[in-house]
Length: 340
Image (cartoon, rainbow, N blue to C red; front, side, top):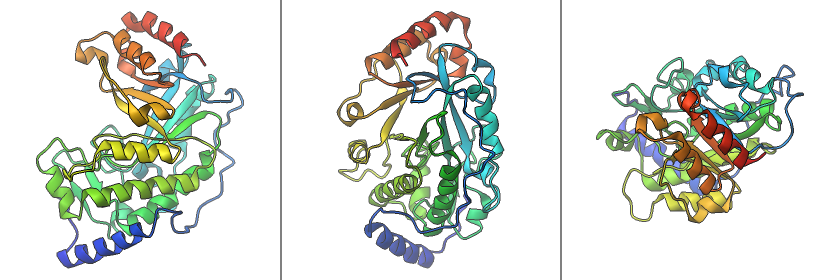
């Protein structure tokens, strides 16, 4: 376990952060942000608007499907630690390089830059940069090696705000970007840690976690994104969210709050039989497969039909399903139902 906080320091820091959070979720502290870079990827061939339809999920490093007519684009996922490996030094070529094959064919992209999560092919298991932890931000790790920061730490939030503002300075308003995922917790979802192991909750509690504090932290992270992005839509990925079991802290309060903030919603559990109601139906909806259809022993057509039935505007399909010849007719048919 990676754990770098004394009990006295924890109590002081938790009190300080709670005081900050109760002061409101307005604009983050002012930070120095570089101006938009003229070298940002060109979009002259991309039509305006936010095209509904099918987006490739995962496989973004292998853009061979960018020419498929039935795909509206791709969801491209990155680590904060890869894009800002040193403070104030940004490697935007990672993003531009993955966008280029899609944009050059008139397609659109969804961007996500996560700060924590299970190993998924990035440069390391650590998605928050090491230099942030070197500034004294506490963090813990699961046995998988995934590292999770103390998200409510004032230093962590300040450095995240600096990154997000630089991110927006380069990409906000880019017509090739359908929306930006507000990456909150594990893999960008609203849950703070992958909680399938018994040590997940004790680990987070050891650095001050509570359900009430986590809800305030979600609001704060959303505020960081909203203060930076003013033209490109933002989407939240609600999950189970709360891991402490406190009465009243359910996914529903996060959903209702997100809708009140004008956010789009992305549900990452698309499967046959999925039903959504309440706040899910009150804003623009994206759905992402819970896992590849083949691995669940079902036809991809059932997932696609469910996405249409849910009136989703965007559906994220695993590249492994897109690559199966048996699925081509179902993909083409579903794409025509989404429209443009």
